[in-house]
Every structure is written in structure tokens, then in C-alpha cells.
Image (cartoon, rainbow, N blue to C red; front, side, top):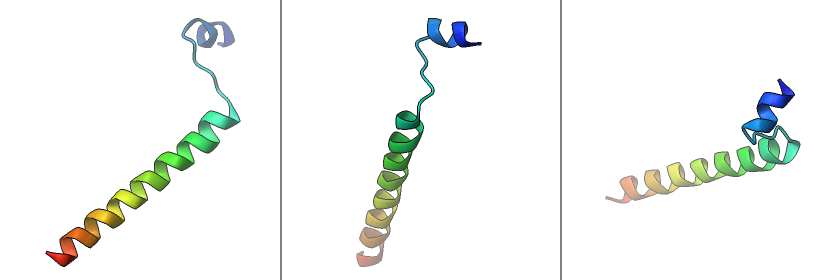
Length: 42
């Protein structure tokens, strides 16, 4: 399994699944709040 992941250049690390996933969730939350605010003001 490790050889397959290394060939495909896939890394399983705390940085990728910690920081990147949390930043994507925060960005999605911010976008939904922004869209909700815009729709409420119209």
C-alpha cells in the first residue's frame, strides 16, 4: 500500500488533513454566511 501511495505521490500527513481540511471548512462556512447575508438584505 505504501508503494502505491508513493508512486501516485499521495501523502497522508497531519498537515494535509488537519490544516487544509479545516481551512476548507472555514472557507465554506464563511461563504455560506456571506450568501445568507446577501439573500437576507435583498
